[in-house]
Image (cartoon, rainbow, N blue to C red; front, side):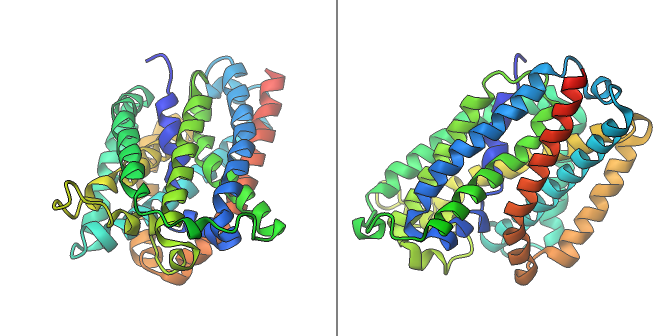
Length: 336
């Protein structure tokens, strides 16, 4: 496998599901797609630093950590914490979304455990196998997004986009920063890649499709209705029909978001495993995941107040983690 760029596509999109996109509308309303475009440009800058680290680490991360043992330990810990935060976010998103719309009468653990087991199996197989699965799924995801956009465009209401630039500059700035942080945060996991080939292309493709989703949501619902729905990207898909008589296609098209979460969860587990000492890394990783499943099931799952707090903290957490990772690993790369 020449590169792992297909994984970047799923990492970039994953944290936008649900509150991720709703936050953008909260900050700048109907203009959030403009803030998202600026956020994409900021995210490209962050991706450049990740690619720089990948390109010049010259070998495995273990070798890089040895260049400065104290900074290496700190970098490993911060990367492990970031990976764990990503795992928690993906599990909460997956559980809430799946039980709310796809498997409404299924107990939480019955939804969570098979998803987690499959992700663990794939993560323990290694980066090469994860990449193969991602390579296989990217064309289907892109095609589904394009078909959704074309199908929903006929429901657009032009006044939903007017007037342009009606929001405050601060709201526009918050939207850009949030979009950059949410899109770039999971890409912290790309530090495990062997090369950075095509990472930019996949990041840009993924963010463009997210912006297209924002346009669809605004065009179909308008900023007022968006604030009512918990998962506006799913609710807008209810408008879709095939040949005007095949309904309920939203469950098929919405699976692209589940795939985003699955690949991101798998990479988060892989990253946790790689950050731990090799002697017991699989056993400790499994223990961490069991605790995480319990936390999601008993504490975070369907706790609306905690979910809101999580997603309002997401932009702050993401940017802090991103800058810490960049600073620490840039230092180690320079030492290298």
